[in-house]
Image (cartoon, one colour):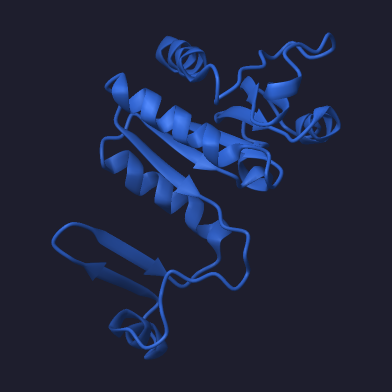
Amino acid sequence: MKILTVIGSKNSGKTTTVECVVSGLTRKGFRVGSIKHIHHSDFTIDTEGTDTWRHAQAGSRIVASVSRNEVALIVKDDPEHMLDPILDFMTKRGLDIVVVEGLHSSMGQRPDVYKIVTARDVEDLRQRLRGTVPPILAISGVVAETASHLTDISVPIISSKTDCSRLVETIKEEIVRK
């Protein structure tokens, strides 16, 4: 299983890029999973008063809610400690690729993870590229709408909004090759 992370600052086009990549790879026959990093410290998927919330309040560290159409795991743990177990779980589900949105601090330093960097503008892009190790497959997001070529950056700039098929093809060629 290959891992691709889409990293960038807030409002830089990460989610739009992930939508393009996931739908494009799925149409090409890849089995795709995704992980979304949520920055809001008070975010919870569980709602106070629900049965799953009550299970957690009683002390359960992991609560699984199982319905006819989906299963959700609510894990009360540090998200940084959960990333590798989540990826292991996804590997066992037979996925070809997992697309991670965010988690720059963990994923940006990993040479085994493919990356797409999104940015709001050229300065934001330069800041995002600092501290991000290759392989970087493309630059996308808002910056790709205004900067089609930067002489000092050798990574292709591909808009996920206007050239999604080219972005997906670039990813496909790279992940199939290795």
